[in-house]
Length: 178
Image: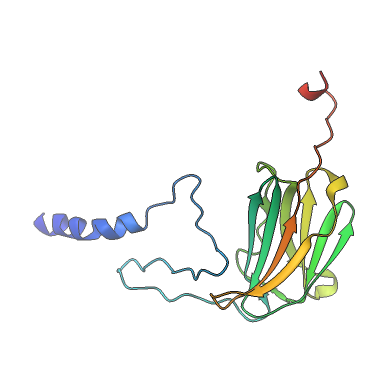
């Protein structure tokens, strides 16, 4: 019995470090800041796994002053081109892979910004990667202000900045019409 109690007492600091994030805490990538991996269950430090070259490693989003900033991260420099297509912005990247979490859709509708969602997928014909950015109001679909940088963490980034959007059109039967 004493051995079990001793194990629990010794393990309690390690368990506290692995506690889930509180609601609202961001546990993702911050440009320029290297992410330290969580320690292994035995307390030893885990090695950070770098994504493969030619892969989109992460997609980040931040609502800013009624607008938005999206960042795309890769281990090596990459090119991005933009085009508006069917009320959405498609950003084509010359990266041929998606890292594990980069293919997950990001729902941005509930933030004060013009974007509704972001989703990455393989490009047409298997060439490159397309990041599709949809807007709350399709009339806001336009190319973003684009900037590239290699940050202190060694990763390459493409930053896409969007200004404030126009109000969403009222839907029939909504309280806005009354």
